[in-house]
Image (cartoon, rainbow, N blue to C red; front, top):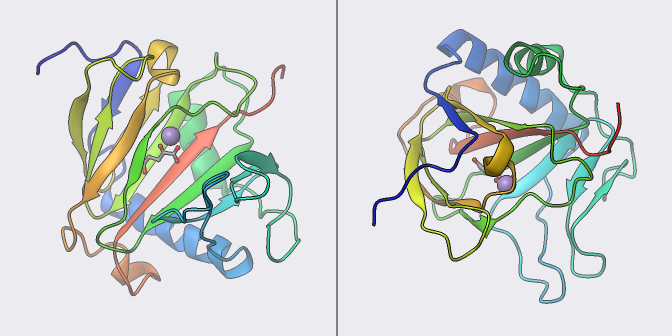
Length: 212
Ligand SMILES: O=C(O)CCC(=O)C(=O)O
Ligand SMILES: [Mn+2]
């Protein structure tokens, strides 16, 4: 079914060149060394996510069976505060979202399992929807799907390759989206930069609290 792309969706193909992407992946490897990747679980059902996650920033997103979706200031296993958001990531945010308050959450999703995916959802745990979300794709290509602000709205699929950047503003900020699949072996970026299992990393930057 064809449909208009939801307003506020912006794709910047190849925004990050190989050098910038390699530097980012190495920065993520450093974050993972002090804040290990964790498997989140769905609220209530306790079903595990197929991606593993960690965070940088003052607000880390996490979910488990007992307490559900939330932001928290510390890593759920180590109890330590999340590492700071790397400067190169903050610079990308400033370049693409000039005038916006800085991101508080740098969520890192690791799609290592070739079958890893993320079901259709809205990023809705933030207080402020006026600030756009920025999403960086690194490593294997993924099939991203985005619809409208209602679950029944038609969706469009877009391939996100390594170095692609997506901004979700306006209606797209509240739109349903997800990752239907990754294409294993389409990039060597991760394997060459500290992630021997290869796969795909997604870095999602969000403003969490209102004001600022
Ligand atoms: O992996 C992606 O590109 C999407 C991630 C996402 O939607 C999220 O973490 O909320
Ligand atoms: Mn999302």
